[in-house]
Image (cartoon, rainbow, N blue to C red):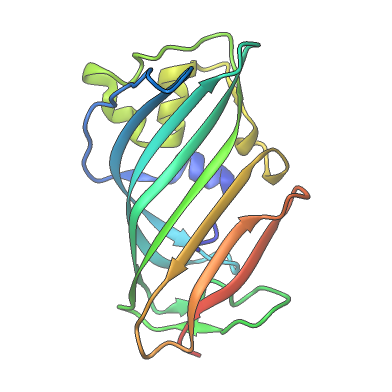
Amino acid sequence: MKRFSIAVLAVSLVLLTGTAAQADSSGGGSQKFGPFPSSSPDGGTCGTSWAMDTFDRSFTVHDNGDGTFKLTEDFRDGTFTTNRAASPGACETSGNHGTTVNSGIVGEFQGFLSGTVTSVIFNPQGCAGGTGTQCATLAGFLLAVFGSAETFTCSLGFAGCDFNFEYHSSDQSLQFHHWQDKSDNHGGEQFVGDIANQ
């Protein structure tokens, strides 16, 4: 996957087009918002952008009943187009990976990010109407639905966050066709494979 910096995720995903979020309370205490068509540059293990991503993003909120909420952000129907850059796994210190990726390589990705929000505010209509477009970013969604005083474990680092992103390309010029970026269940991040020509 792209190497998502969790803090960057919260503020840098850019909306291409959007619709007002549709809240669905039929999920046994869970509400769904989105999807929101979005676009974002993708950072790899070297800290530089290796691709541009487009995807549909949606949110699911489950009220835990104690002032906390499980928030899952899903990235679906994702595609990427590479820049000429270091491959996403180039600076990984272990495992089998490449070093560079050519520009114009296309592929697909999907993933999720899940953590806990603590807030005294929960506004399930926060994405409705004229304010819906702000919910097309994670930071905008948190503000609209939970207010400015919320805390989200995924914004605080990997320890309080569960995530998994997988990338694949069938381009025959690649030596490495699959990259995965996921939480390692020990408060860290794990990388598997690469998207790389060399």
